[in-house]
Length: 388
Image (cartoon, rainbow, N blue to C red; front, top):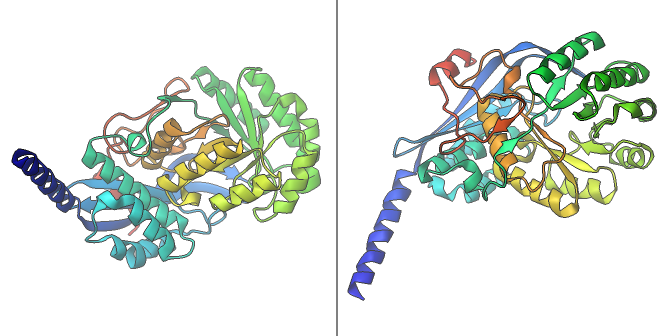
């Protein structure tokens, strides 16, 4: 009995030591501007540089975890200076001195501390997941429940001004092994975009997944015109055709449109998913960590989608680095279903914050190996892209 007691005391002492080692001693909010290979054009927005927040959380034992969130003024309302201020003025003071092993509790406290600011909360939550998983020597996927798959099929975004350029790019990426494509719509007249979708389908063939994303840029009747004329394109879904707050319009459109609707900008919380589903407005949901407020909340949202019978599309914002791409890949590996695809966006960047960016190989994305998110961040690169 005494030996057993001594063993329990030794275990408790070791736990105390581990907790002391994972005391958070530094939280750094780092604004960066990452260059894109070429501009991405979507309804209401043209992106030439990606303005992102990186968060670095360091613990007393010298471990560091990284998180990332893209500014998204047209989606979450978050702009980079506000994201930095939210971390520095509110979230960092809450975290300093706390045990990172209590990351779920800390993430919940951050979520309740300030209204909105899901981008800042996302970067903090992601960094907490990374540092705790690194301390335990396991992947983020294992920390959040365990992988059910190891390989994912990411989608490639087509958003050129001319259909000829979309077709040329599609042919090139198809040859490289990509098997899932997304068209940006809501920019040109609906009949023109419908014909473009058909032309892209002919280029890709019948076995390649193809969807379309309007980014809230279409009118009700324009969507119906596009959907009717684009039938031959066999689109998997149309993503967020109407304004984010037009739940009634989305529900009415879902009843009339022959192509399933995917909610994106309309979804800023699990409550939104439940409401849109109850109204019959969506058949699937686009889950982004920047909208949900981190990896933990995104995992919860995916569980809710599965329970409601909704398809799941898991995505980064255009364009996030290998930090966010690795996080979304880890989430994709634990997703209950991923039948509407996965979208990482680091390959649109001219330069990454990692010396070894997360690769898409022959149209497949493999779960990063190693603890935490599984990506090694170059602090030299971070400093080069840091906004002074």
